[in-house]
Length: 337
Image (cartoon, rainbow, N blue to C red; front, top):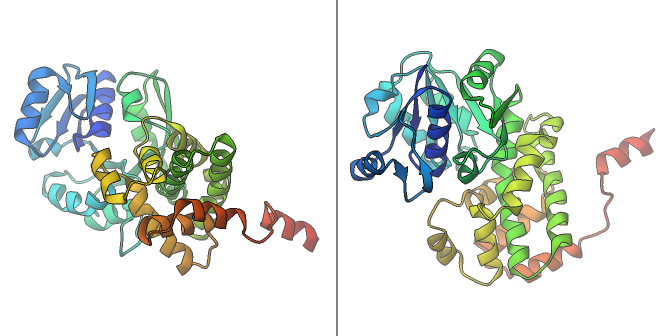
């Protein structure tokens, strides 16, 4: 048995804390609000974020930051809170403690990946990234799930050993850049498939958005240093599929509401939790421009979210673009030969 801590008591933090406790670890689930943590301790359930999932005996809901003094800390905070959270917990972390980030996004303004943010703020701690198709609601209920952890090999294997269970299979991948970008950018495409559904379009449209959206993700991801094979894996196509199709997906639900004509502010209020795809769209749009990467789906998503464009017109603009080859790079290589 090891002592581990999960920082962030939302749905994902609670699900991973349950998972780690069932794996035999002594787990401190650390939240911000004393009253909420006391309710969780009393009723053995996170009724607001993960209702119906019993918190095992080895899991302690708490606000005590001193319990971060462990060999593994899992960060489960929204992407825009990662830097602030790292600064807050830094005095409590032991040197060499592995920090596992689970947020999927990038930092606005700096365009840093979240592992880069954590490395800046926590230079004494090795950082790993956990990603892949994994909804908290299903992990908390022991539904078979596969994920990927990215870091240098020793750190990744340690996290794999500590988190893997018969119902939670953990793969390792040295491509931190690709794993992070796949997890962040798929939220943009999930918003778009939700918008298509809200407009009343069917499976053909959603399949087209997912497939061409993956092409955009990989194009930008490779330009930023990711391995193209990573985008065909769990943190790429795997996470894209689950986020674009699942009823659990906040990004998909937000997109459906946008497609039905609701304003963005109303949609975010109704969802009630962070919709990472909104911020990711703005970041991806500007990164595409900065790196001269064509990202037509992302561009239309940006116009709908931040410029008030009509989603129906956005779809028409995508369909009426000039003729293209499906795989431009393959065609170019073939013709050059």
